[in-house]
Length: 344
Image: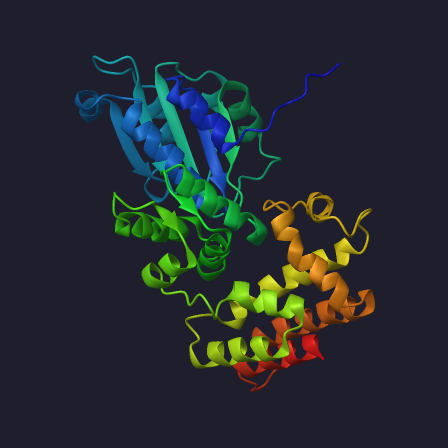
């Protein structure tokens, strides 16, 4: 029976690194640069002592080297040190992988070679990935989906001894979006602004003050108003966005609304549509029963037929915001039309 291959995650890679277990090869690739940078930076800061780095740590960029040159660097032996570290940043700019493929067949145990390949992945059909997997670590850093972002915010703050209000986590996630580097940077600002003697809890008031997201007019509140079919509140929020495009725009809000109604359509097929926790499990919601409340409201306020019509309208509006079949309607007006269609 073939051995089941375990998935390489950021957590599993970091667990080994923190133990001081370094593989000879790391191929870090994917659309989300945040985790690639974290792993690369950890290796750069911890694999060697400060005194060893001068002679044994080399950082090069893919646009400036060939695979042959990287392989030659990796075959060198360390000077007065247990290991050497070679880091190739922006490795997606390397044109030919053949010489590195050859090196991966028999890498030096005294070299830690890090290939940081961003904004995409190496073609899985290429031999280099299979060879790297046999001797080292291959990690794909995938973009977080919108529904995963509040959990990221909560986890990030908890790891830094801060708690966070659920609404505040959603506010930050929806305002910043899936750029994890920017998200982490904004959260760092919030943490620094919190005094040591406070309860270190991030609330909607804290988010409003430190990040500039209105606690009344934001994507979280718009989605809630739509779920409740609160026409007055939803229209007030959309008008606010029209006057303050930095607070929320169609390019952020449309994916949020699409995600909500897409999940609402799935909710109609749930075995138990009345129990919050069961519905949350069915929809794979990270916030548990609390996160399912809006979908319970949505099930009461929107029929399955209307939900399908709304999904089609969201797709149409999304295309128009990108210039398809839309010669001159402003994006703000498109958002107003969409919300009107949803609510009526």
